[in-house]
Amino acid sequence: MDKELCWDLTALYDGFETPDYQADFALLRQAVESLKGWNGGEDAVRAAEEYIAAQNEIRSLAGRLYGYASLTYSADTTNSVALARMETVAKETAELAAVEVRFARWLAKQGELTLLAEQSALLKEHLFFLQESVSYVEHLLSEAEELLYARLRLTASSAWSQLHGQLTATLQVEMKEAEGVVKRPLSEVRNLAFSGDAKIREAAYDAELLAYETIKDSGAACLNGIKGEVITLAKARGYASPLARTVKEARMEEGTLTAMLTALKEALPQFRRFYRAKAALFGYSGGLPFYDLFAPVGVLDKQYSYTAAKATILESFRRFSPGLEAVARNAFEQRWIDVEPRRGKRGGAFCHSVHRIAQSRILCNFSGSFSHLTTIAHELGHAYHAACLFKQPYLNTRYTMPIAETASIFCETVVKDAVLCNASEEERFVMLENDISDAGQVIVDIYSRYLFESELFRRRENGALGADELCSIMLKAQQEAYGDGLDQEKLHPYMWLNKPHYYSAGTNFYNFPYAFGLLFAKGLYAIYRKKGAAFVAEYDNLLAATGKDSLEEVAALAGIDIRTPAFWRESLAEVTDQIETFIGLAAKAGGR
View 1 (cartoon, rainbow, N blue to C red):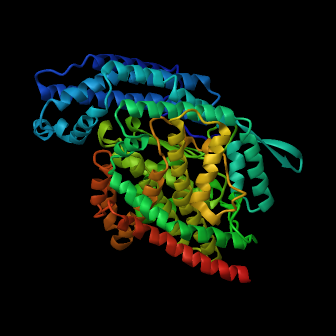
View 2 (tube, rainbow, N blue to C red):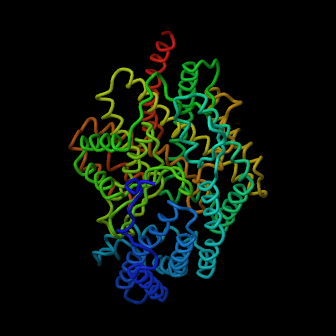
View 3 (cartoon, rainbow, N blue to C red):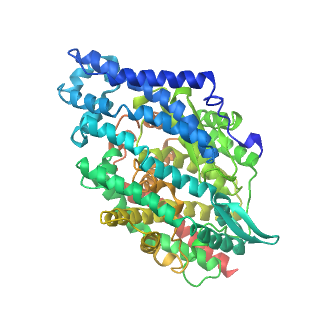
């Protein structure tokens, strides 16, 4: 294991037993205990100020402590000490559940919040937080019930989530290779979907599905436990459904989601044409097998070393702004990134930002493909978003899921656009396919996940679902989304087990936010193309506002109306135009 390819967490802490970690944990415990005694008071301004100041301090401190434990655990899911520390920190903050209810109900009785906020710079800065707190009053349980749930969640849905993560991170997949049967981590085997060798892609797919057989019942138990809890709590809080709760927590109007999904469904036939055109390149007469979704096209199978990937990203980001390049350079030079797959390391990729030290950490499983290069750019986009928020008080940095994917996908676009400028005709064809494939994952596959989760919640109302039933629902969702674009006999029934997005009681329907992020980012990038460098400051201001406004109001800062299908159709048109170009080029390539 190359140390230079592993992240450095010492800026957070240098161990769980170090004096600074122990001192911060003691400080957290003291601050929580103090805030638990908050009880309002006659001086409303002072009482609100005390509460906000305490919450900012506690959440910032807990973020550092929990972040260190969570990052340590993500890199090594066999680390039982890190897992225990995650729970210990979560237990402390769970104790605030009762006082949060007390504050919201007290605040709702204070009259016009705008007038209250005008009396204090701190309250004026946190006006959106105050208004949002009051908006949730009707969905709150009693203080005792909220506290009980916060405590129980740690050994219920949170524990199920951790178990799922450990199951998939430690799963060993048996691959038949020249030297015999070799066991590889799941993340490494999934990376083989990008191989230029068709036999390797198919073998990896077959081996992956067989491996899931060994953990499918445990995975189903995790999923049932989490979704059952979500349904119970949504009803108790008075939501019409888990989706209704998700939309509210996303700071999104239901009409906005409906508008986006309407445009999404309209575009599905075009993506199916793309998949059939790609299938024809590989000699298939019908749809594309699932294991060839990411297969490289053409004779060019360009691979990047990590050093080359860094250089490409930095040069691309420099074209957009010095600020974006600086964030990425810090990430590379200060070892904010954990790069390669290994046993025990969590699969996939994510960015975790720590407000208290104004830094981020990125986990990826880089294999050298261009897609994995853009994955790093994607996660650096999250880091840049965080950098735009670090000057804000903690309570004003909590943006919602849909807007979370905007900066990341915007940065992917920056890289792809820059690389295309110097690409050969053959490279352009390869990159065009790669770009459409990525969009297909965010539009078509995400839509299948939305369908799956909707049906999962509907059936979970009546009882637990077995692994085979979950596979059946997933296959039906993929058939509806991909249609004849994929070979109906070669789908992926275990995507419900592979994707960690389903395994969180606090972030349900973590699928449509990706489509929102892609299409909103494309809309922003279209504005950037028109305005050039003048747009950079506007973009930074927009990102800085994401923690303290609704999605509709944030979009309005860029002159975008997301409430009707028109904007979403316009963004999708950019992708469907690419599909037309690809189909024409693919027809020529097939004729050669």
